[in-house]
Length: 242
Image 1 (spheres, rainbow, N blue to C red):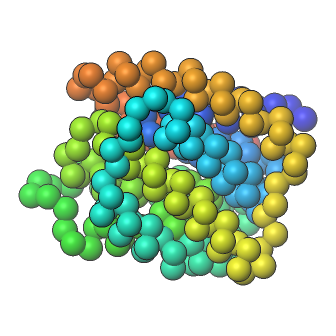
Image 2 (tube, rainbow, N blue to C red; image 1 turned 90 degrees about the vertical axis):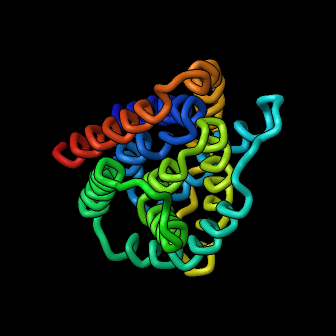
């Protein structure tokens, strides 16, 4: 029971981070949710709650979102085969292996971002980011790292990064749910648990809004995103060791 309460706290914190930066929900919530309810149900639960926090961002902030339309379409199109590949990964690996894979993926993201050169993004970057995100969504429910590296490489302003991430997350939630259904993978979350966590997600989203308004007007946005990824690594490692 203590682990379930800890997972609920991680869900609230993750929702606040997602609202504040455009990323962070699954990065923070996934390790504890996976440990609390097991991989298949955790993926389904995080898909549902992730859709909630991202739709709140798009529909309730009294502004017009400005995502990158063409890039979003390309990323989501390439995520479809990735989502099917992720189902295979989900079925093949045990919880510890999935957590290790997630942690390694985040570390690789940080390294790629640290050593990436200038000159814009290559043509293969968007397809690669889309495929990787689809794979991670259905295997670990953590979608953001690959998308984040791609979008930061574009040199975009914070608002456009956040809006593009949010649109892609909504699309990936629908695609991953369809992939799980099409492959007969039972990832349906417990309805009572969903009902209990939905208000926490909403509260976290509201708490994160003013933080984004401050970040969007300064030069700390990218540093904060890197910090979110580092926190997710620390939580993932702690969960794996435990």
